[in-house]
Length: 406
Ligand code: HEM
Image 1 (cartoon, protein in one colour):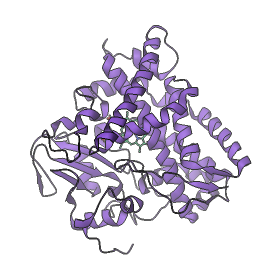
Image 2 (cartoon, rainbow, N blue to C red):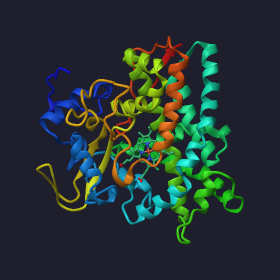
Image 3 (tube, rainbow, N blue to C red):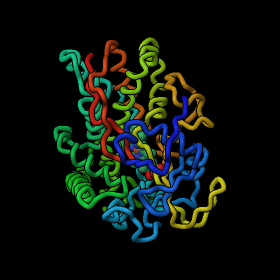
């Protein structure tokens, strides 16, 4: 792809133009400044190379706990860091070993690959029902009507949360996920915290019920999970059930939205997948690589550390730009092309190392069933939304809507 001249000093990563097409900026960063100082926060650097991102994500000298940042240096109106980690609560995503190891082991005992694979027929039946309705209407808005509905219904089913309540969670979950963005104004932060609290309160009642009356569901398994007689504390249970519940909403919704958008904009790849449904496994991996739902993850140096010739000081923060790493030409051949048969090994969309996404198997299953079914059933599908616009999130990347005719 031809490189256009990008003046990195003038780049606004939160501008709608960047969200719509971040790739030229990421290409320029990788080429000109693989360690790029962020204008959003002090002592914060964006990393865009695959090898550097991967090295940091597996290096224990880099922490996931935002509390390793020096106090009072957030560029926003409020310090979201304390908010997002809920004081001292052990949110798996923001916890380092040894607590991370202990909690992750307990959660993995409850959330097994078997419990996920068992869901496949149910997910297919749910998608078939939704698509029967689409066939009758001749049109569908993919992001919200399918992309949101499927993961939220599935996680409710898995956890044992009444599906009839699913429409209540959408706004709460969307508000809560903004807390990932780190630098926010006070109103957005408060709205995010309120969303999180509402979900915690809702789940708290269900957790209590499962203590005395366990069911065949993930919530009961989490409540009763033990390792050598020790389980999750009450607070760990609530906060990490919230994480499980929210982590899969917008991410998987964006996989479905971004993924279908990429396929429809690259019609030859849509047709290729339609002609050979066995490509669905590599196709979903490629869509995750090509335009993934999580653009960025962050780490803080716990000690002075050198990466690729750059000296970081303890307390420095790096934003590993997973989406940029996934298009690094040193790692993937012709990285800006979509190739649904690509077989070049793992991307970084689910991260790497000890925080590798716990829900990756579930996300893949949902992505394969939804995208595979849409492509097989609606060969004449065309995008109606033009131009498409992206949500305001910084860490997550997804379309506001994608209206299509079938
Ligand atoms: C396409 C969909 C998804 C994407 C792209 C995604 C991406 C990620 C990423 C990048 C991380 C690690 C962040 C870091 O290294 O700091 C992560 C962690 C996590 N994800 Fe996902 N995720 C997805 C779906 C899900 C689903 C469906 C669930 C569960 C229902 C889930 C649960 C989690 C949990 C619990 C963690 C924390 C793991 C840890 O810290 O050890 N995710 N995810």
